[in-house]
Image (cartoon, chains in turn yellow, blue):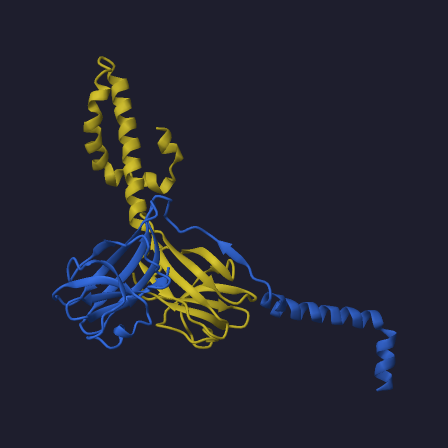
Length: 183
Length: 167
């Protein structure tokens, strides 16, 4: 039962969908419980506990195995503000999507943001405001160097917003662009 | 002109204040010091633990002599060994086809078929279609041998290549 307390809420939600895993596993553990003859309530409680614990353990393992691989990836280009590195989108078991920048480098600047844009690609210093480029804001750039993660708002249509842009909001200038493709 | 100078002299404090505000505003707008100051962050990969294999290189396969497509990804597994995985993979079937690693500058990549490739053997191609895994030799220097080649040993023919880029 203590396993349950340590897990994140999102994993507990998935408990119901994978109940069959737990049932299967409990069968193997039945002999251990049968030593508690005449103690039906205890027996049931123990059974429930082992089902819960094992199901959660199984779910966690399965979820992690799936998610170390991104669903989309792309490489940054940008000469004017020398931007390089990789952008990848990961999807969690609960459908939560995260953008990760790795081996990333861009020039430091004022009010720089990470965006998903509805365009195949973009030029250096492109002005998205003037060119009416549709965009989804992912947040302020955490650092101009290094590995970093950004939450993608739930319901974002990645078929439409399939390019990552590093964008200076103050001067409406595009620092770097990474068109994403299927991993 | 004289009037202006006298005016400024009489209101030194005011002008000092105004210029200070202007400089501060310009500094805030352009943040010129950021040109010289880097801010590095180092977050870990999402949804991953130390037990999961991490991708370290990836690249798209492109055709040379034969239609070849898909993705090649190198994973570092929890025990430190390297694994090559081909996904969405397709090439033409052929005799004695191998998966090998070569240096991007190898002339045999350009003048195919003909010259033998100076390569590191990964394994015989398991199938000409579909997802497949290969163990990479422990001594494979991927920084140098950064091109994955689908290679017909019999005719020294390069079917397709993928340039492996850091993940």
